Amino acid sequence: MPRELWKGAIRFGLVHIPVSLYPAEQSEELSFTMLDKRDLQPVGYKRYNKSTGDEVAYEDIVKGYEYEKGQYVTLDKADFKRANVEATQTVDIIGFVDAKEIPPYYLESPYYLAPGKHGDKGYALLREVLERTGKVALATVVIRTRQHIAALYPHNNVLVLNTLRYQNELRPAKDVEVPKDLKDAKVQPNEIKMAERLIGDMSMKWEPKEYHDTYRDDLLKLIEEKASGRLKAAPKSKRAPREAEVIDFAKLLERSLATRKRGPAAANDEEAAPRRGAGAERRRAPAAKVRRKAAGARAATSHRRAA
Image (cartoon, rainbow, N blue to C red; front, top):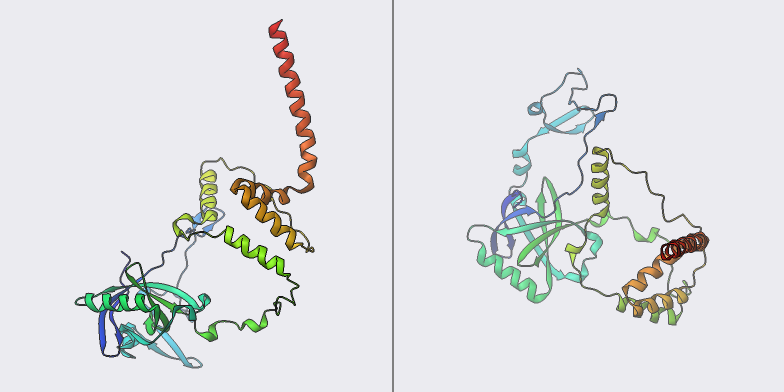
């Protein structure tokens, strides 16, 4: 179980549900140490006083806010709580909305809420009502000295608190150039129907355990090879950058649908084919000659043995 961030409560109306807040994310990023390339010794970072140049011990460092040029007021952990004790220990529900009303790009960081002492009944009741109504609770919460707007929803018997981005933290989409409509993009009715069929054929169940960071795996493998002195030469990129070209989507959709009918293996072969291009044709000829020579050599050997 991850470390508890704080104990507090969910509040809505006169209802008060004791809960504990836990982080739901865990970092799987590889950790690298900064080294001096001359002797591969770790490089350290010093905290120092910019006025005197003297190193400052960690316990002597405080947080300060510059309210005027060169004038600071210092704050400690108690000050952050003292500013609003209730805000730092409560999930205040301000209302309920349909889940589909919150666009996915507003979602920021997930946290788990677990019931505190005497909180089981209220926790289970809120979880069940949210499940039955299909609603998501909108709430305010302070996490690590910053107030967030958050969505509270049930998932596999656990109440999840997902902090949301504020609207002013998202760039306006109006600055992005996109086609106005289907007519503007010159999309044909038959292309829509084929695209819908292809999406239907490729529909699947969401199984998160089937996905993992393949780049991280490849990087770990490279690190192991380097450590054991077995590092191979870097492979050439399979995909060369291509200039923009006019694409016949109708033909591509027809081919995609046809290969889906023949099965996954055919679909994989079809997807690989465009990457091979004309170079593959040129490579096939020498390969065929090699095979014919090998076959001739085997036949001659068999003839000598028979003799």
